[in-house]
Image (cartoon, each protein chain N blue to C red):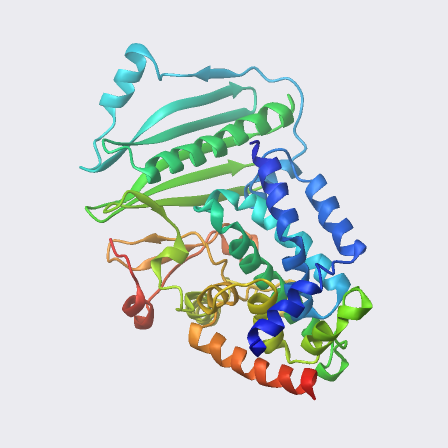
Length: 155
Length: 289
C-alpha cells in the first residue's frame, strides 16, 4: 500500500484514542485538536523511524503525549494555575456519560492512565512507555484511580 | 463482575465520543500531508529560498559496469561486518548553482534488516533532495548543496553512518543524521533502543543538555541557547529532546547529541554538539560501541 494511504488508515483507526488521551491531559477541545494536528505532522515526518509497523498506535500516542505536555507548558506560562479551564466532557450519548464524567473529575495524572488502561486496553508496561513513567508508577496511579472511580460511581 | 471489568465494559459502551470538530481537524491535517514524508527540519530553509526554473542537470550513476567497480575499489573498506560505499553521485554545476550528493549504501554479507532499512531511508532522503532541487531551482538562484557521508563507528558491536548536508544560500547551514546498526543482530537502532523501557532517558538527557547549555552561556557570552527564561529569544524554548533524537557515540563510547543550526539556538550558535557525561545514563545503557 502506498505510504500515505497506510499512514492515513492508521491515524483514522487511532482517532478516538488520540482524542481521549489529548482530552485527558489538556481538558480542552481546541488544544486537543492542536495537539493532534501537530502529532500527525510529526509522525508522518518521523515515519521512517518507526521500526515495527504493528506498534503504530503506542508510537503515535507517545508523540501525542509529548505534544500535549508541550501545549500544557506553554499554557501554564500564560495562565495562573487556578485559571486553567475545567475538564470538558466530550460529546457522548447521554446514557453513557457517567464514566467519562467521573474520569474528568480525576486529576490529570490519573486521567491519562485510566484512558489508556480502561478505554484503550494497554498494559501497565505499555502505558509506562507511552507516558514515559515507570510501570510501578502506572500501577500506583491505576490503584488510586480505581479507588476514586469507585467512590464517584458507586457513591 | 469485578470492578475492573465493569469499568472496561462501561468504557467500551461509551463509543468513541469524538466530536466533529476534532475529526474535521484530523481529516484536514491528513488531506494536507505531502504525498511522501519530508523532513521539515531539512526542508525548512530549502523551501524558503524561492528557487525555480531551468537548470542543466548532469546525473552520474556509476552503479553499473566499470565505473561502479572503480568507485567500489577506490573507497576504503571500513570494517568486517559492515562497510559503506558511494553507490550513486548526483552532480550539478551550472552558473551559480552547485549540487553534489553522494548516496552511500551499506554493504553487509548477511543481508541484515538494519542495512536494508537504512539504505532505503538514505535513498528516500537523497531522492527528495534531488526532486526538490529540480522543481525549485531557479536559473538566477544561488544554490550550493553538498551531501556527504562517513562511517562514524564500526566495531564488532556497533555501526554508525553519518549523512551530512551542507547548504549555502543566504547563510550556511549544516545538518546531520546518523543511522545505527546493532552489529550483533543486524537491526537498525535509534535512541529509544539504547535504554530499558522503564527508564526515563528523555528527562535525564534533557536535564543534562539544559545544564550544559546554561554553563556554555555562562562561559561564553557569544553562545546563546533558547532556554526557559531567556525571553528576548522568542516564545519557544528547548525543554526536552525528541524521544528519537539524533545521536552518535564518540571515540570514548560517550553519547553525543548533535543539534542542527537553529534547532536549539540562534544562527550565531551554529550546530552545537553535547557529549553526555551523566553516569546514570551509562549505568542503564543497553548498547555500547
